[in-house]
Amino acid sequence: MMNVTEVYKGIDNIYNGNGSTFFLKVSAPLNIAINISSIIILSITMISLGCKMEISKIRTHFLKPKGVAIAILAQFGIMPLTAFGLAKCLQMDPIKTVTVLICGCCPGGSLSNIFSLAIKGDMNLSIVMTTCSSIAALGLMPLLLFIFCQGFPGMENAVPYFGIITLLVYTLVPCSIGIAINHYKPNYTPFILKAGLSILIIFSIIIAILSAVAIKDVLWMIIMPDVLAVAALMPLIGFMLGYIISILCRLGPQCSRTISMETGCQNVQLCVAILKVAFTPQVIGPMFLFPLIYITFQCAEALLLVLCFRCYQTFKPPAEETRKDVGSADVKQEEEAWRQKT
Image (tube, one colour):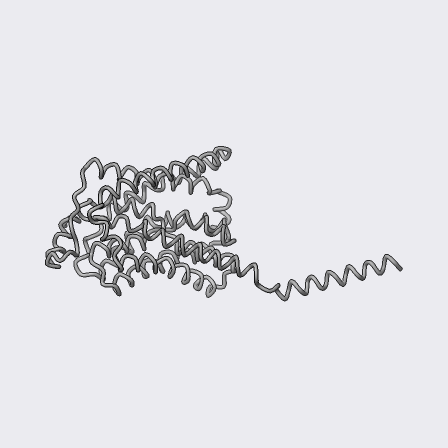
């Protein structure tokens, strides 16, 4: 079987070298530094996620798995199909197509927990869903990538499945460490979360600077209209369809809002690590930064939804049931006062 680089060279010949693919020269030390930074960011993210987990809450949701099951179906149904459909409609070149498919097939990210809290969702469901989707991705992500790559000629062998599976298995280790810390040493959890956030910010800045140095000559390729369109539409479609499917499955508004956030928010740290570590710089080029564009639109759209929800809560009229309850309470109070007087 051909390796990934050979596959992309063959695709480049098919496209007659018209710029559909290109080979980026990055020095070995710079490439290693970016790879290490990506792994550290992914590790910190998964440890922090594990520290938010409580075994008792996991057990509760597994005893009543309807919400988690619907959320997983939404996560691994809506987002991969959205990525596939957008790549097809926009006729993206092979490098961009694989990048978009990998991002679409990634599990939910930890940012969904923050947005679920902001939109007054079910936090237990959100955290359990993020963890379950990370575990389910071990089998579903390679399977979905294999299935959807069949829809693009010449792409059948373009995905480094071994590298992706290796990284997925690796993510379970720091997540398990975080769960163990939260279970056996819960007093350490707040410190780890704060320290993890600081380290995450520092290494995010480092990887941004290193990446800018590495791709400064071809940075324009990551801000093409088709790339921006996909980055803007994918999370928005995920948020909307995640909520609609939850409502159709007769879940409550709180769970529906949670699943909406879980569906639209991808694990961009995992996506960056896969694109940077599993592919060579000569193959992936600047497209390993696509998840950073995706997370920009993802956060902006999620914040807009949170703002709309908060405005709705502020200005909505009181529910009819609430009025009746208040009216009944007032009548009872008047009756009790009258009895005491008489």
